[in-house]
Length: 214
Image (cartoon, rainbow, N blue to C red; front, side, top):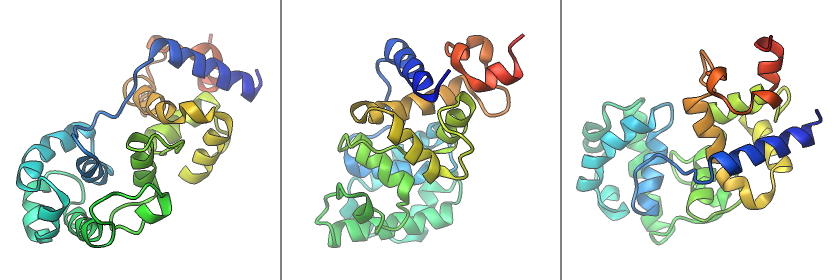
């Protein structure tokens, strides 16, 4: 099977079996999503959704967050990973969002990355979810699943994975394809023990063919 054929099969499978796929982070506006994505680095969406209930009640917008200090924010996010750094990033991000971007998250990936705590992955998520841009955020799930299936080959880092996926996936479905891969990795193609018996794409999965097919 060629790579082109594999992409076609994978896309067709998800289009039929997962026509609706979206982030599992709870948010009601772009500001809340940005905060949640920053918090989600090396932390589960489930944990972030618990944390943000009180956090958004105390800081309902960027202005209120920008007027706080990291020590106060820390008390709300202490149960997530790296709370000290994230508290500093959140306050710094809010200050820049208010003062430099007139309280509007920029659409441009490079502009977004000027804000503290916003790396390429976070910027790609915002661009994709909020602005429906054809950007592919590569987290651990996307990185692992893409390589296992055979959508990418010997990817050395998230950027190389991103570039290869964007090259082969039609531009108009890149935003939802990002969620397909994340959700498949989160619930089926798990890190330690992939649930191949419950997977619908084993027929064209390199990992299955190499390691498990009898």
